[in-house]
Image (cartoon, rainbow, N blue to C red; front, side):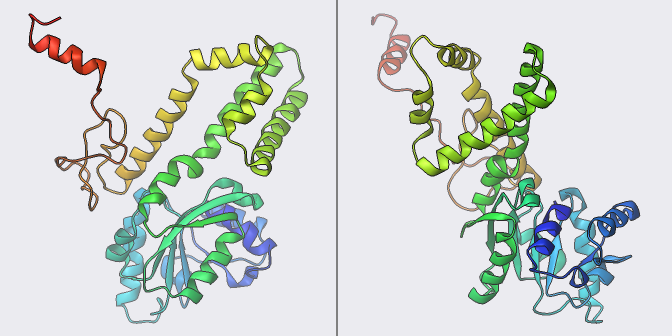
Length: 317
């Protein structure tokens, strides 16, 4: 993701290559960065990379955050000026909440974001939030950086970032899997892979653009393509019979739960999960308090209540 961020920043002239310093534990990765983006500086350590930086970008795997926290905290406590007092830490780490960065790094000005890989071509979407001590002018600068990746959506409640991970953050993978399946089907039918790829790419691109420009509900657009007893109706029948909607929704819920787990939060949310009271997140692994979940699953009513009454009173029918 960090490499994906570099391209629009440099291409859109928001940063000169020489003003960017990159660090990675892999020397091969840094060599690749310098090859792709000539002029970008590289560092041999985290303190060297963040020295006198106004914006520090976390682009690591969640499991590596503690190590980076420790390096930044050590640099901050060393008093060498490696970490500026007004430095802002921008995270693109999945699942990690703002408080985790404050407690871990000692930096208290945090912006948390969840971009996606199409950011590399300026067509991404990024959901982000930040601490209250980042003023309006600084937020505007952060937004300018994130806008270079595509569309941005600011949220006051960072819980929406975990949710967005399951839709826009990981969403491109779902689309690529659909794309792969459609292309493979086309090849199976007899198209060359090149032709099948062209057809699928432009079908997905055109359908998305059409939906965005018309503003119509997807169901309306789908019905406009589906003639009674036609070819599309036959295909939709198979998709519905295979629980296509359910599989997609279950995948999104699974992704959301995993995002919560990676941030040390309770993941018992959504359909068929234990209910959770409103209020601050429950630590992962803690006992669930009574209450309602984010998406509560209410007990059945109406006819089912009658069935329950009959079970309780065998003489009643």
